[in-house]
Length: 392
Image (cartoon, rainbow, N blue to C red):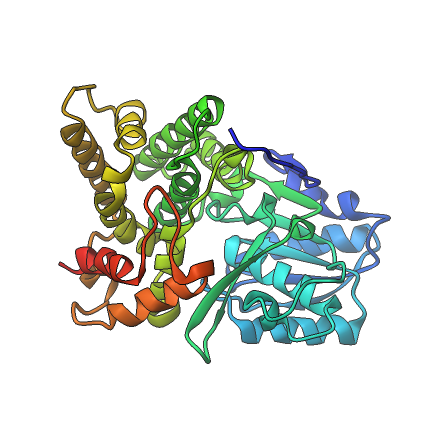
């Protein structure tokens, strides 16, 4: 196990009806905030009215900015930064899923940053100021951004989707009320579950020795995600299954599962190119990328892949490691199919003759040395091979 330092200051409030306490929970710490959200669903459901009533009851003033898209845009972030500076807000409240929370984090750090917020994502500038505090009310369990130090934003002008991480971006308060998920369509549940699972894959498939505890925690969380998502396919109003899935999504990405081990994030880098260029849903893109990536790299560390296949996917142990691993990958594909997730680039609307070389170059360019880490280090040509496996 590697050395590590872990700090998580988020106050995590979980349970039915807890979101109605947002005003009380923020009272005395916030005077005026930015209320940030996506489309009109929070108004149609009545959530907007309940949140704003709670804020007013606690004497908290607010300005609002809606319209966050599934792949949060740099333009919306810049609009939020300008609004926060003009209105003198001292916090950001995100009501929504991972895209809204990521947008809120970018606004929070961009408001206090003295330069261009995009240059933080491109690493041309460093974060030297304290971001505005962020609070969240989660409505779509998926990205785990409600308890993570990370944000991802798309620059539509340059077709780039980049992430940024800093411990000061962890929300100060996050409320998770599972009943808020009951109106979500199946595809959003499926995309979210796929994203959660991949957040664990990026940590679990490692060459770091001595990771028995976090291996076991990863495996238990992966099994829970798959089991509860399957239940929700049949019983979308099962609030207990939503509760299990929502908590799993938080644990999958608050880095408790990544302690003391190398992490990859190669599948995310590969998928971000699909989202940036073709605006596909992140979870859907991962469902296509992950099996092809596994097929490309498993021989570099067959032991960890066989362990996953037996302990998570339920494949019977065997001396034939290749058979075990390949059956595990096929069972994963079958689970994706059960959830209605895509299997190929074509199902994502991406043509077989797309410029995969350019996407591989873009994915590799975000990492030091121009290669992608993991159980096997991938150069640009090998990254392109993953894309080609998805296309054919």
